Length: 221
Image 1: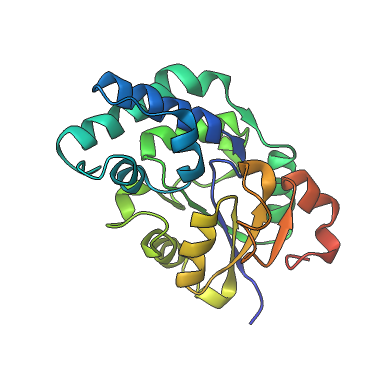
Image 2: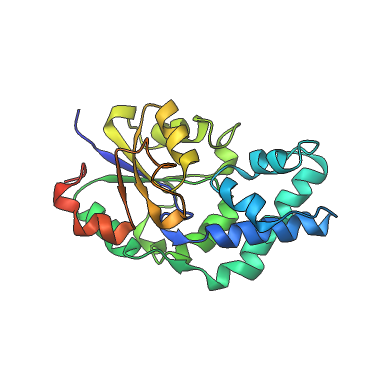
């Protein structure tokens, strides 16, 4: 069956934000007395905040109590401190324009909160190109990436079957979640992960610009 829709991860895929999220986590943990290093957090960026927090401090739940407060503080830091300095990944706007011109249904599939998403889409310079009603965020899934719930919800929102969609992502957690939902992934190195970590993707490109440069030979051609 031919591809009809493209599911869009945002962080690390369309906006260069993964380091900022890691710094925000470190700062949020510190606000509640936890000494966490950047290098502990950075490899886990791409997971939902709830899962990441529990991975770093197993006694915490990212969904309640102090862990939830840390998650909320991280969100505030992205929106109030780090968001203003975020830049698009190379070619992000041009790729979205190309996908729209090619007739693909575009559905946002992000582990960010809905409040964060507007900040991130503006930073990616694609805000007015995408339909905000065609977006899934952290509140739309009971279990975050790398569980498949968010991808499955995104498919439902886009009225797409798994074999009719491709996810654009940048982390091994995107790939694991999509694979569990039966969706193939085109991965970008812009998220800071190695080719070995992204090996289960259909194809790997440096950035949206790199995919755009090779679009005619890609699965989206």
